[in-house]
Image (tube, one colour):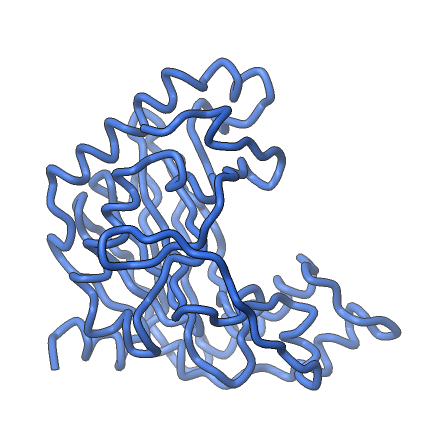
Length: 284
């Protein structure tokens, strides 16, 4: 058993140092620079940047070929964990220049596959990251915390209706219950200071988030991969809080990248506000 495999099992997350070749990180960053040179006017005119930086760009890997190569190399570097449920494919991705600055949360309400395991989060640092530019944080052992009372939570916010696919107030309350439980159990939170090329893998049950991005003179470029085995159905809160709903099999379309598969598509979504195709944005 590798050290990072043991860390993942015990802590619910692990850091794999020097997982991605620096030359490949530099290639991906150059692709992002070229992407911005071409598209910044479009992004600025549509108010899609945050403090002059890209934040929460969904599936930017469709335009940046270096990010696709990072996916393949990350799966090799973390193979003892990422392939535990079957050979991992790239389901969706996120890209950040400004730190996510998210509060502690579990992913499972938005990545729910029923009783089957399968989803994991994989995070690659494309910059050096520390407390000043939005480091990732994770609560050790929080993947072992039992679920809070889902029926009570559902009835608190949606007493006479089904839970929609996204319910931010319910999501926040769910995570607060887990944060309280982690505190009561004395679980510690680790700040993940990493160097560019380092890899973090987390269990979807692990509480994790991002620190404030204080130093805006530094970017915090990172590439987040949501990985699943081939044709693993992924549901949201409307299934997570209604466990009696049947989850039907899916047959997804994929593109081949190296020896891996990634979900087919050409749409890039900026902060859930506006989407563009790779034809409009370019491929770099």
